Image 1 (tube, helix red, strand yellow):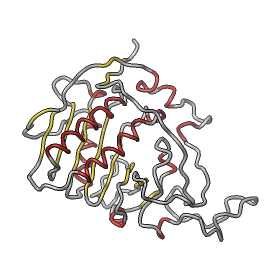
Image 2 (image 1 turned 180 degrees about the horizontal axis):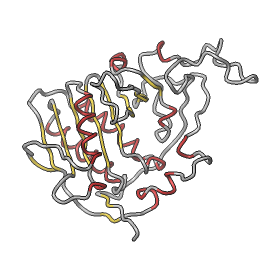
Image 3 (image 1 turned 90 degrees about the vertical axis):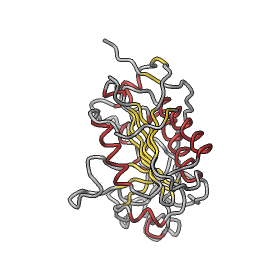
Length: 281
């Protein structure tokens, strides 16, 4: 039986490009020649070295997180005063000393220069060496889906209000990520901006226009009502299938660990965020 994908909205903007990074994928600096015919990055003044810059390179290729700049600790994020998009594993808890921490990051604002010499990084999920390419098999990539209307449950924390611009700029960057055509198979995304963190999970049975619609609705709500210490919206429970769970968690106190845990629970499909739900959007 053919699977269907359910979407909250049909509006979707496609866009992808290329980003570059002259560092190794494990986070170490690239100090050896790339090949015998290409001596960079040695001696090249335009080579990008992460430790010499407060922020990672701009988000140019939203669909290739392997082109993003890797950081090995959460503390490293604090140097950057611009909004960042992040990918991190939900199976490696940030509060577990045994975890291997790898944060792939890019700057989602236009205030960062990207005039650095670096090599294009191929997107692994498009590799011809794969037995199956996810972009050709993921339900959200190969099925048009059926548009349905639904309401997101909304829960908010204490009235520790903060300027909503921090949150809305994060959500705008997350919208761009899920608007990229080749991100139809992505289920997780995190973001950070000057102490405000956000995390999103979208089940594989939901089309990415769902994320765009929800992010837009939440941004409108926050611009009107303002941001508080914690904000959670979700489509979860009430008989909903696990592959159609969706949620966004925002913490303006900088607790990325708590946001990671919430997103992880959504991804397991067996536990929804528990709170006194204030309203819906």
